[in-house]
Image (cartoon, rainbow, N blue to C red; front, side, top):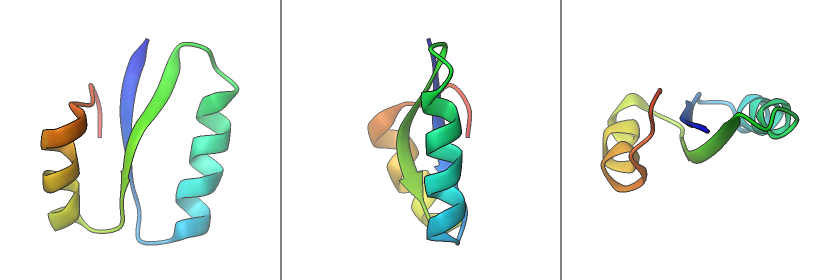
Length: 51
């Protein structure tokens, strides 16, 4: 399983990406952030493999 952190300033874009990821059993969204600064905070808590 590949853990992914979703980062985009648009809520609908993040929601759409999460829905797409949920259709693939090998990918899972472990967190979301709206800004690059927030991404750093979230990434330290959820330890994604990609962001």
